Length: 404
Image 1 (cartoon, one colour):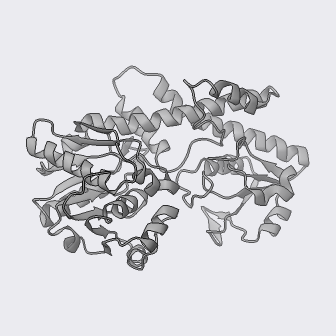
Image 2 (cartoon, helix red, strand yellow):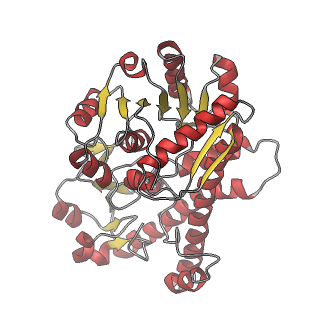
């Protein structure tokens, strides 16, 4: 049983997957203020409705007695807070080869103005070395970095049952070391899992943990995708090969289901950022992981073109945009890259996606499943769903195991 700490006032900046899951976790035992810039998200949270697709967050908002208030007013949220958790987005900029950390910096400036005594905890994914440099740039010393390790549709679950808690701090500053232990204790207190492995380290090491962890996951995805490409082109049973490889306990059965490529918000941008951070450091593997994802999408597009030619068709239907079943997130979805490759070849592409109406990125969206199937010569999907069973002969997918 985790030791219960005193109730604290905590602000969380950003209510995406990271911010919303952390806010919900901490609001079980603390007064939490969630800040966002979108009025509709704030209104949903205050009605105890989840602004993101996550069954555990939905359940906790509906059933738990949470002290959680959402607001558009950063001053009201930050004033008097002991901890301010930064969960602002950091998108990868392909021009600068660097995360866009402007949203994080905006929160840090406001926190310095409204709550100069608060401990700021960055949970946004940032480049290696960012925390140290931003402390010097803004003159804010009371900063921690605590990376998150969660899946987008299972964000709160992964906070309730965390694989580990990592907190980066200034190891030479006793006050910040104590603050790091306090914050780790708050995360553990809200968790269901007991005896959580907890690591304290320097800022830069904690930043590296996050990027290397996600790059390793991308490497696994890339490895099994290339295994699948080999099997497909040589007429082999990819599932049998994967089963034979993964029953070795040193390999394991996680992240081994072939796909159109790794996607989602984290893996594409984190691998590219780590590659940029390797500037001046000898490497081949990190670059190969990034390039492998593009090669996989090109291979998938070629196979789809072959199937389209074989049936004498002209239209490819895209069944759902999300990378994972049960997710509502399209960000950096590999299937969008495949769509762009097909469009460049002159193929007509349209989408079946119930969460979108009209069009998406210039592609027409059909909301009626039967019309979508009838009008598609070939249907592609990253993850198989039973709804597709009546038109199985039209479907192209590399989902071998029926899971994410």
